[in-house]
Image 1 (cartoon, rainbow, N blue to C red):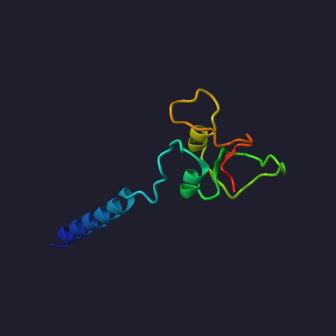
Image 2: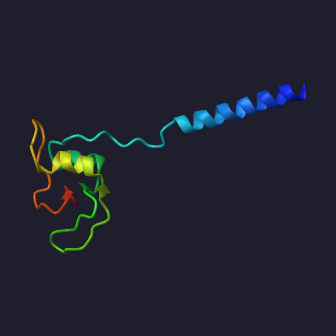
Image 3: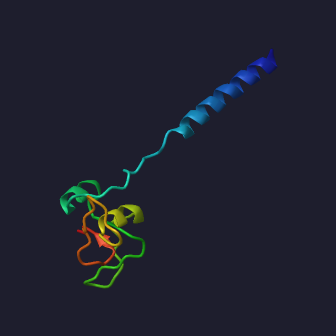
Length: 99
């Protein structure tokens, strides 16, 4: 009888643990090309940039934007541009639509 209770309890605990880990914490939006900076800033309020980007005017590292290389490369206009991709990093400092 005691073994049966132990098995049921361990199954219940494992079910709770598995269900808690199966839910993603906060999924980031899929990378896409935005039509303009207003649309990008609705999702990323301070802009989006690549890792290690520096502000072109001050030369210092900027830390208030979202670092996401995939989203940046969809919106910076570098490389082969596909239909619907826009150049939103006009000063080419590695940060698109910075505020």
